[in-house]
Length: 285
Ligand SMILES: Nc1nc2c(ncn2[C@@H]2O[C@H](COP(=O)(O)OP(=O)(O)OP(=O)(O)O)[C@@H](O)[C@H]2O)c(=O)[nH]1
Ligand SMILES: [Mg+2]
Image 1 (cartoon, rainbow, N blue to C red):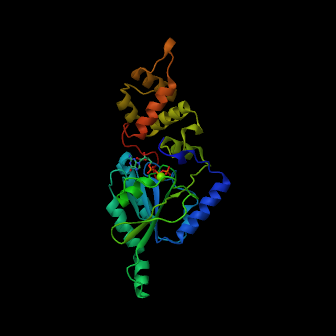
Image 2 (tube, helix red, strand yellow; image 1 turned 135 degrees about the horizontal axis):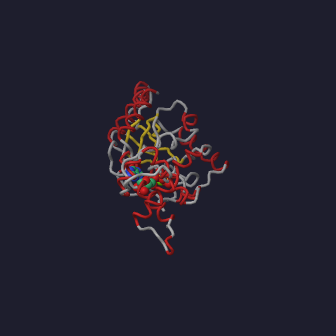
């Protein structure tokens, strides 16, 4: 599918290696761009990243904001702002928010640049690194910032030997290998959010159950989206009945009038992921 890293198993040894690589790369970096999914800013945040970054300047981006609820994204920006952290909603595919991101990186690095100048160091560029969980859009942002069509394949932790820097406008340089972070594991809701948005593979649950769980979640946060998209007159308060109703409306019925649950589940999951169900955020601050 989209990428191999969906199949990464985050066993402890791998986490330790990734962490060490990240800490080594960080020594070269002036500003960290921490990428979160605008639909799930809590669930898509790596649990250890703040400790790894330490007091290095950081900018948060809420990516895939084109798929998120605008009002809820504003609440998240506000919430981060109260924590003293600048968060910028972006769409790495289409480029919305990219200029604000570049500006904020320059702002974050200005203290360091002034220090350099006072030490007589001139023209040193600001070095950035993007970090985030799988599938959050790191490569898309790198491509967007660098204006290239594709980043190298094999950009996995431990694979890259020499460091590649990409020149950006405005005195910025970007490490072209992003830091792929492990997601949170401990909480079922978080795991579901990550699976709904494809940060982890579907196989954490069978696809039918995952689809049913998504229907259940949408019934809580946005039943209108389900009603409108699947032309349901009334919506039952039983998720399985809602799933059946969707299957009937779509004609996902097999021989002997059995419901094709796999197809129904995949349809709802895909239509959520592609934004066809609407701009839906799964988490509020
Ligand atoms: N709608 C939407 N899709 C996006 C956006 N950014 C990235 N995507 C899509 O999300 C998927 C993953 O994007 P990548 O850039 O490959 O993500 P990544 O973080 O590099 O993923 P890994 O390399 O697997 O860790 C692709 O299908 C992108 O097209 C965005 O802002 N909006
Ligand atoms: Mg990538």
